[in-house]
Image 1 (spheres, rainbow, N blue to C red):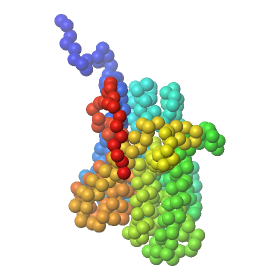
Image 2 (cartoon, helix red, strand yellow):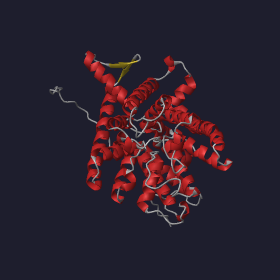
Image 3 (spheres, rainbow, N blue to C red):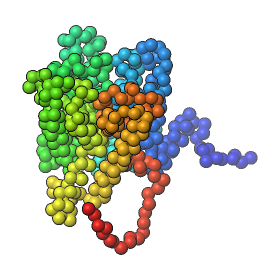
Image 4 (cartoon, one colour):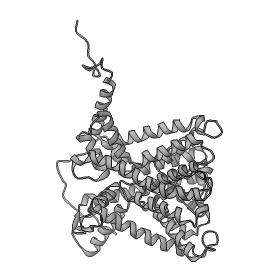
Length: 469
């Protein structure tokens, strides 16, 4: 008698590994049809897993389950390495809960597309061509054969940098009176949170008590800045050292714009807050400079703060909004529209003003397709921020400046807060959760993931230029 076969029937059905084989085939098909969609699904599943873990009574100090909307918000904030909180990380969550949050930060910091690549590699026990294409999209790598090794370098580099920061911070915490166990835990927590640009802190009062402690502030700033550059840039720096001519165009633009934003942000923030008694007005000149530089680093995605955001000058809030929206480097732990997007748009404006036919930088021509993507990223991002702001204005009844600040911080996965997140009703928190998820995934990734297919045309219409301006 013939055996009836179904699409899921396999020759090795009796093998204990047949489910793994089915999963491998599913991932392979999904990766082939849309790597971005695979990343989106993977990331959403990870958020749900951590939401479940944080909803357990074991995760809280009180032993009671956390409301689902608060668990979801915290899970999204951690996995999306944002740092916005609706409950105190130090007092609400137990040791188990804090470990879960730290693990979520570490996984989220590796990057959603890189994580999808690792999933494909883990299921199939090897990284095939389609899995490599997923990593190519995230890390901007040119040779397929290098991806498997580079994925291992990503993980090794992350752990090495975080370990170095932790080893610097631990002695200082011990000197400040903490036990060895507490000091090591806090050092590891801050190291992972800093490098991944998460902004979570294990202290109830954050890092405000260390506002003049260079031993703590400098490693945090270094970790946030390095993490905001992105793995493609870090790899270039590791392999080429200080040979600027050997850097890729992506690395050059990322470092240049990051440094420019750091300097301009420090000067602007410091100038507007210099005499503000609610922030740094009463401090000495060296401390004012330190706070200005620290604020400039953190506003681009770090999320740590030394002053109350509600006491900032209105112009400083505007500067902070702009820096948060700009964000850090592509394929990095930072959020925002990315500094390379800003670089490409500025270069296009300069080329147009000069009348140049091509957009050039460092001896390279930037393709028109890249400029279209940059404009799309800015347009989609601005639309998301505008829509979320309008919704939260209706829900919260708060002022525009306060709502806009929180919305940009959520979308740019920055984590700076004026306290609005904790004050919102559950539906408002859900809006910010969705915004953090979309902000971390990236407008282009989300759009690609949701697209059913890519349109291909076999013809072109005649060209005609509309009147602009």
